[in-house]
Length: 499
Image 1 (tube, rainbow, N blue to C red):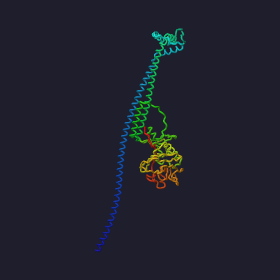
Image 2: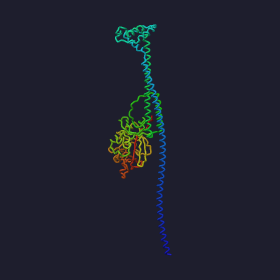
Image 3: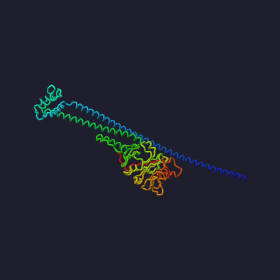
Image 4: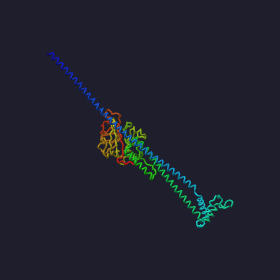
């Protein structure tokens, strides 16, 4: 019995150990299954998100195809209108040529009596014979015969009143005819000449009118050609909005109305004061343009044209190609890759310059739009109304309107923030130079809320003291997360209506 009991006890201990090992293996398998389930759930969510993105992309493609068809229809309508204008121009040109031919025929068909009448008046003046007082009504046939003799083909001699052979010359016969007939011959010839002159003046006036219409048609053709050329970049930049279509119809209506109105002379226009004014003038493609705000010399800016208007880009951080740890004069005048080559600007960093920004916004309140992107491809934006003081105020940033957008305020509760660099300390922290401590010039309050002009890191640094010198917006991603890209751009707060 003892032996059996001992054997059973050993068997029980073995079974217990086996059960414990089995339970551990089951728990391990359960953990692995849970991990696989969570991974599978993430994959399913990612698949659903990818499917949703695919649906959105297909919808966007369909929308773009529809807009492309509308663009082609508008282009075809404009092309037909251009052909009609060209046909009208050809018709007007033909009418003008016919009128010129009629004028030439009228000038060639002038009666010889007009020349005779002019000769008669000249000889009457030379001989001092008053021809208007001696005429009688019954001398009409005789005078006609005389004028016929006067208008004969006998050549006039160059030796005065008598020819070289002593025979009476043409001038002597005209003088005798004038003495015998008086004004009876001069008055009908003068009236005929006046009628011809009046007819010629009418024809010249018609020619001027036709030339005026031709000039007007040429201006309309140039206007339509510029509109056709404008449609292509609008399609590529996705600015085919309903507002744009309404404005295009208004522009075409104005063009049709101008056909019956007056054409004003083309005047040389001054440079636009900003990108939105350039947008209102019809420039809907983004790029580098020259502007001239009031009281400033011309300078170049990068204009970001959207469907709602033109934005002037004042700062861009994309690839770290430019060192933003600059001194006061550099931030005042601007630095970076701002050239006429658009492709170089898209891939380059730049700061427009505090003085230029001040000239752009000095006429009123402006919107400041800030767009941020992290290294995972997420983006956020914030917009607020602001004004900027001059150099005497250290280019103080004045927040005059509420913030809108997806980001929370990281500028601070301070409504007025002067600009600081490492050689000009204007921040609100008395014992620290924030620009020197964090790197880069900015509107610092107490150093710790935002700095979009910090060092550019292509990867997140391991050391914390390095991360705090990067580009950051504290209310998004925290104080120690260096952002991938930033864009700052401005636009008038009270937008004008597009013509």
